[in-house]
Structure formats: structure tokens, C-alpha cells
Amino acid sequence: MRVKIPRREIILFCSALLFPVASLCAQEVGQEVKEVRQDVEQLQQDVRELREEVRRLQDELHGFRRNSFPQCGMDTVAPYVPHRFIHRLGIEARPQYVFPTNPFLQGENERWKPIQSSFAAHLKYSFKFRPNTCADRIYGGAYQGFGLAVTTFGDRKQLGDPVTFYVFQGARIARFNPHLSLNYEWNFGLSAGWKPYDNDYNSYNGAVGSRVNAYLNAGIYLNWSLSRYFDFIIGGDFTHFSNGNTKFPNAGVNTTGAKIGLVYNFNREESDLTKSLVKPYIPRFPRHISYDLVLFGSWRRKGVYVESGKQIASPGSYPVAGFNFAPMYNLNYKLRFGVSLDGVYDGSANVYTEDRIVEYDYDGGSGTSGRRFLVPGIQHQLALGLSGRAEYVMPFFTIGVGLGTNVLGRGDLRGLYQVFALKIDMTRSSFLHIGYNLQNFQTPNYLMLGLGFRFNNKYPKVRH
Image (cartoon, rainbow, N blue to C red; front, side):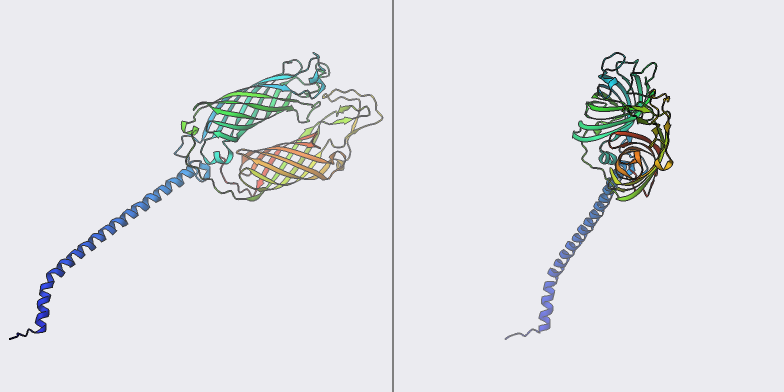
């Protein structure tokens, strides 16, 4: 006999049998879900901590980039280095050969011996940008300072032993390794203590006409860092002494030779002699056009040729005044170029002597001459020219050259002229201007001593 069980009871009975198994599976799944959630929460926490660490490292890196040289965006001193600059004291010996550029140096002097050599001893203080900084990368380890030198030509009676005070600046041309580099350096200053031409007591000296003369020097050398404190330098240079045509005679003295020296670095660190793995951040340079206005003045002596072919000096000095207005395109941190409108009043331009006077006494610089010098009208002493300009920009100093021609000018004021200038920063918008003007690459014209102003200057503040 077959017993019939209702379908509903069968379903209830099977459900009762499977419930413990389903409950157990549900508990296991819930535990796994809980563990996954905990893992996800822990992972999220780790991600947040990692983000904070990345943000902190980014802030530190950005701060290091800015603090590695405060000019790149901060006004506070960097905490990573104890000093912004390395201070240095150096001594140099410069044995030189004297170029025989005039009869006096060639041997037509009191001793009837050529003056062929000179020797100079230099004491120099400088400060330089610390290696592995923003300024070091931009300007190639630039350094600047002032020096004192004593020079002897072996003839104290006729030339003297001048003492020179000057400013100077130099930087790297190439770096071979952290201890050895090829550098350049220029010097500019005044030298005093010369024995100038004198009609009675020093009549042979046709090279030097004044007791105080300008001093210009440029050279290249190898710089070898011997230790944390000492650098050894050896190289060569060229030197020029003259009075800028402010007195006659003005043949000048030119020398070339070797330079050997030792430099003591007061606060250089061992890390400064190693190559850094981190390169400092350099702000992008904003290319722009700035405008330089220079007002200058000086004085000069004039030499005039007469019938015999000799040149005689004017009886006095003549005033010079002028201006330059130059729009300059600033290409990068170290180079700008442009054109300049140049105006000048030269009181010595086109002066002449009376032809009817034949006898004269040449005294060089005392101002007495048997000839009478005549000055033409002012229209013969004014000129307006255009010149192309290029400037090499460095901290505190800018060196500029120019080549131009006068579009308005008569007589002496015609032809090509060349300009060499040094600009010394005073403020962000003003500078001192020391320049010299040549004519046709050979004839000395006049000094250009003045003050300049720069407009629309967008140069990044990376120099002070």
C-alpha cells in the first residue's frame, strides 16, 4: 500500500534539512565580506597617508628649489646652506711683456733702452655664488669683487710705479670636473702714481700724459680647487693703461703675460666640491623689450695735424655731452641686443689752427702752443647717429659694445664709431655708465661718464 505524502510537507521537510547548511554558508560569506571591507578601508588609509607623504615631499622639493637661491622666489635665507655667498681672498703675480707701441717704449728715452717688461702684484677680495644654486647655473659660478695692485716697469724715474684700484668679475667658460674649470675675468679701475710727460723733466715720455690713468684687463685661466679652502689659478691676460684722451700725450701702455695666484675660500663647504644630484629650479625667463636712457658727459684734449705732418695738442680741454636711447630685446638671462639713437655735443670737433702761423712749441699737455686753435660754430660740433648694440648681462655688471655711424654730422663727426661700455647696477631701474667712444676702430674719441635709467624692466630678481 502506497502512502501519499503531501507536496507541501515535502517542501517544508527539505527546507528544514537545508537551513543549517545555508546558514553556515551565509555566515562564511558575511565574514569574508567584512574582511574585504576592512582590507579596503586599510588600503584607503594607506593611500591617504601616501598622498600626504607625496604632498610633503613635493613641498620640501619646491621649498628646496626656491631656497637653494633666495632670488628664485623667496626673500628669506635658505636653510640648506649657511651662507648665500662664498667669500674669498686671493693673491696674484703677473709678469708681463710690454708691447713697443711708441718710440718711448722702443728705446727713445733717457736711458736709451727699450722698456720690455713689467711685474704686478695683486691682492683681491671677491664673493661668489655658491655651487649647485640657481645663480650658479645661470651665471656659471660668477664672482665679483675689488682688488689692489702695484706695478713696476723697471724705470721708476720715467714711468713710475703705479698703484691700481679696480673692480673685477669672472665666471666659468667650461667645467672639466668639480675641481677643475676654465674661467675668464675682467678688471676695470684707476691707476695712480705715474710719471707723466713733462717738457722740462720727462720730455721723452710720449706714452703717458697724466698721473692718473684708466686700467683695463682681461684674461682666461685654469682654476684648480686644491682643497676645501684653497684654489690655484694659472693663465694669461692682456692689460691696457691710458687716460681716455683727457690729456696729451695718450699713446698708452699695453702689456700681456701670465697670471699665477692662490685663492683662500673662507666659508666653502666640502659639498661645494661635489656634483649635486639635484638641479635647482630656474624660473623661466620672460622675453621682453626694455628701454635704456643714458645721459653722459666728459672732457677731452684734441690733437691737430699741421703742415709738417706732426700733431700738436690743443691748449685746453673741451667739453663733451650726449645721450643714448636704446630699445633692447632681452633674449635670456645673459644676453640683450637692440639699436640705439646716439646724440653728442663734442666741443673739440672740427677745431683747427691758423695756417699763417708756422712756428709752434709742442709741450704735450701743458697747454702752451704758438698756434692759435679756432673753434667752429656749434653746428659743426653736434652729431646724431644710429648704432647696433649687444650686451652681456651678469650680476651687478653689464658689458656692452656698439657699432654705428652718424647720420647727421660734419667733418670730424663723420664716419663709423664704436662704443665700449660698462654698466654698474645701482637699483633695479638705474645704473652708472662708464664708456669709451672710438672712431674708425682706431682713433680715440672721448669718455662717456654718466647715469642710465631702464624702463619696462621685467628681468627676474635673481641677482641680489
